[in-house]
Every structure is written in C-alpha cells, then in structure tokens.
Image (cartoon, rainbow, N blue to C red; front, side, top):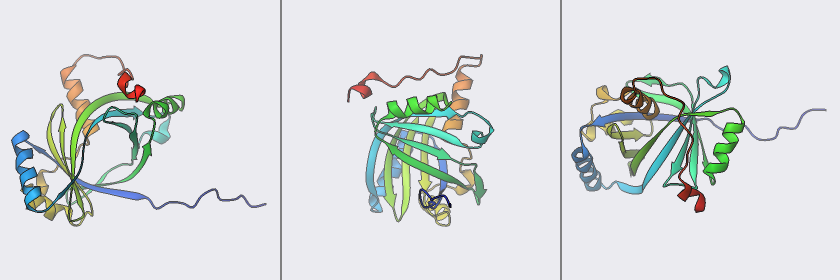
Amino acid sequence: MARRRLRTPRDRTIEAELKFRVASARDHAKLRAMLRKRGAKLTGRYKEDNYRFNGPGKSTRNTTLRLRVLNGGPRGVLTAKGPATFEGGVKIREETEVDVPDVHATLDLLQQLGFRVGWTYPKRRSYWMLDGVAITLDVLDFGWFVELEGPAEVLPEMARSLGLDPVNALRDSYSVMARKHQKARRPTKSPATPVVIPPAAAAR
C-alpha cells in the first residue's frame, strides 16, 4: 500500500540581501529623510532579542537557527537559513521563517530537541518598503546598519540610489558580527550564554 503524502512540498524561499555599516545615528536620520522624500512606507518599528542556536549533530552545522523575540514577547519568529553564496556582492541563501505565538514554548521545544543557545544579542529595527525592496535601519550594540532585501537584480541599483556602494556590502550576518563583538569584549573563555527571556514577556 502506497504511503500517503502528508503535505505538498513547499516552494523554497530565497533571501537576497545587501547589508551596510554606517557611521552614526546621523546617517540613519539622513536615510530616513531620503526614504520619506521618495515615498517609502514605514511598516514597522520594534525591538528584537535574538537567540542564536547551536544544533545537535552534523546535519545542522550548515544551518543557522535563530529565535527572534519581538518587543519582549510572547510572540516571535523562528528563522532557519542555509549557507550563503554571493553574486555581485549580494548575499543569497535559502531562508525559512515561522511566526511563533509563544517564544517560551518554542525555546523549550528546541532545547528538548537538543538545540542550545550559543549567544544572544539585541537589535532595534525600523522597517521600510520602497519599490518592492525592504529597507531596514538597524541599531545593535556594535554599530548602525542598513539592510536591503528584495530581488537580487535590483538591490545594487537601489543601494547606489541611497548613497550606499555595493562594493562595501558586508558579508557577515548580524549573529556572526555579534559573536565577534562579544569575543572581543571577553577575550578569555566564558561559559555558555544562559537562556533568559525577560519575565515581563511571560506575564503577557
């Protein structure tokens, strides 16, 4: 007897992005003014607490798994990303995202499956849309950044129109940069990052 297919295979989502470091909050202010002048729409502004996981076994070594807690919870986003390739400076990789209504339950589930939090980092983000391209202005502990996400073929020209040179696009992800920043601040070996989601989130 043939086995029933439980679900139809989904189309894989491919993420294409350019990420840039800028010097200060003043650069973000200039970009906001430019985006408003061009009719960009501000679609969201929020704080993220990012939990970067290390997975069990060889099968998870090439996948980045991250739980993003939005505005203190309890809602969040679980993201898995595959290895990156680069075309003309644009970073391209497979991405799967799932909205989660309860970050505490999700965290418990991942730990029961053998995943462990390797490190955490906060991020403040404002999210704009312009001509089909998502443009985020991000503030992290280690600097100010701009990220463009959309069709790979339009990202370089969009970046140049905002005064950003694709040649200067960053290759590292935020989680990699956060880890480097934390290691630079703590040169000696330290224990694994404890998993603590603020109690205020649980009360909501």
